[in-house]
Image (spheres, rainbow over the protein chains, first blue to last red):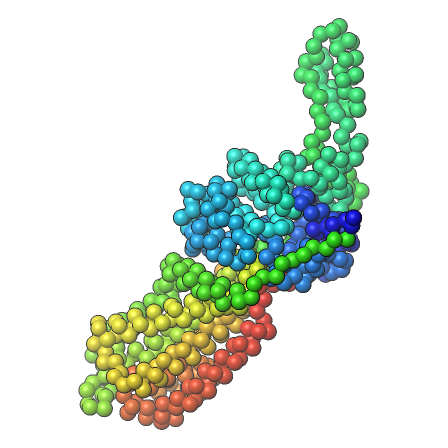
Length: 307
Length: 279
C-alpha cells in the first residue's frame, strides 16, 4: 500500500521582503483529514506561510504543494476545493447574509445548503440583515460561513474566532469538530491556545520565521515540558515543585504534615499555552535579534485592511 | 504515493456566474446612497439646476424657428456626463475600494472566473447607465418639456453612441482603478479627473465658447466625443455649424471612442490583478 499524498506539503519554504526573511526555511506536512494548528507570536510568519499556501503570495524559494498543486499556479478547479477564512476583512457589505452566502454558493460545484450554514454559524436571526449592519463578531461568523459554503476539502482558518464571545467560540468549535468528522483537512492559526488544544491534532510553533517545534498536541514541547507542577501553601508561604511523580510527592508532604491535608494543594499539568510560552521564551532568549522581527510589520502596509 | 485527484469544474460557468454577479452588483449599487447620488442622480440634479437657472437665456432656435430651451440645450451634455459618471467614475472608485477593503482578495480565493467579475461590473454599468439615461430623458421630456427626436435614425445614433460610450467609459474605469493607492483616496483621485473633463468637454460650458487650445486638449479625451455624439441626436442640425469642424463628425466620435476602448482594454489586460501580490 502506498501512503496517501499529504494535503499540504512544505519543504524549506522561504519568503524574504528585501533583506528581511519573513520565513526562513520551514518544513512540514499536513495529513489528509488532519487539523493542524500553526502557532506563534505576531509577526512570526504564520500569516505569510498561510497566504503562500492559499496562493495569495509568491514564495522566494522552497517547495510547497497544496492538494498536490503548486499554490502559486493553482487554477479555478483547485480553488474550488479550498475554503479560506482570511485574517481580516472590511467589506462594505451592502448585501444581506443570505444573499451573500447564496451568491458564493453558486461559485462551487457542491455547495452546502445555505440555510444550514447560516444555522451552523448561529446567524438565523440575522439572515436578512445587511452585512454592514452586523457587529464585528457577527461579521466574522459570515467570514467563517463563506469559508465553508463550498464544502472544501481543505479549510484555511486564519485567526477565525477573533472577536467571538465565549459562547460563539464554543459553537464554532462544535462546527469545526463536525467538519473534521466529515474528513475536512484544516489549517488553523490562532492566538487562543485552548482553541488549538481543543481542535488540533498536531501543532507547529513558528517564531522568527522558523518552525521551532512540531508534534501532536499531547507531545509538543517534549516530555520535559509536560512535567507536572505541584503547588501548596506551607506556613503561609506558597511553595511549588515540578516532578514527574506528583502523587509520591504529595503523599510525602502529607506525611511530613502529620497526616493532615495541605493548604492550597494543586497538581497542574502544563497546558499547551504554558508549553507554548516556554518554547517561545526559550527561542527568544537564544535569538536576541528577534525583536527586530517582532517590530517589523507582519504584512506590507497596503494589504492591511481595517478590522 | 497516491496522489490527490482534483475534479474539473464544468464548462460554461463564466457566463452564468457573470449574470449572477450583475444581479449582485446592481443590488448593492442601489443600496449605497453615495453612489446613487454622485453617479446616478448627479446629471439629473445638474440638468434641473441649469434648466431653472438659465430658463430666461437664449440658446438659439431650431430649424422651424422655435426657441431652444435651456433644458434642451443641456440634455445632451448631461447624458454624456451620465456615461462618464456611471462608467468611469463609478467603476474606478468602486474597484479601488474593493481592492482596498478585501473584497477582491476574498473573490480571488474562490473559483469565480475573473471574466465573470468583469461581466458583473460592465453589466452593472449597462443596467444603471441605461436607467440613468431613461430617467434623464423622461424628466427632460415630461417635466421640462424638451421635444425629443422623432426619427428612427436619431435614436439609432443615440443607441450606438450610448453603447459605445458606456462600454468605453466602463473599461476606462476599470483601468483607472489601479491609480488610487487606497480605497479612501479613491474619490479624491478620481473625481477631480472626471470634474475637469466635464468642464472642458462641453458638459457644463458650451464647447464652442472654449478657447481653441482647450478644445484641442479636450479632443484627446473621450467625453468630448460622447457629448458631441449626443448633441448630434438632440440638437437641431443647424447647431452643427458651431462644432469645431463645422459638422457633427460622427466618424470622429466613433474613431475616438473605439480608440479609447482599445487603450482601456490593453491597460486592463496589462495591469489588472485580483490583489497586489507582495508589493
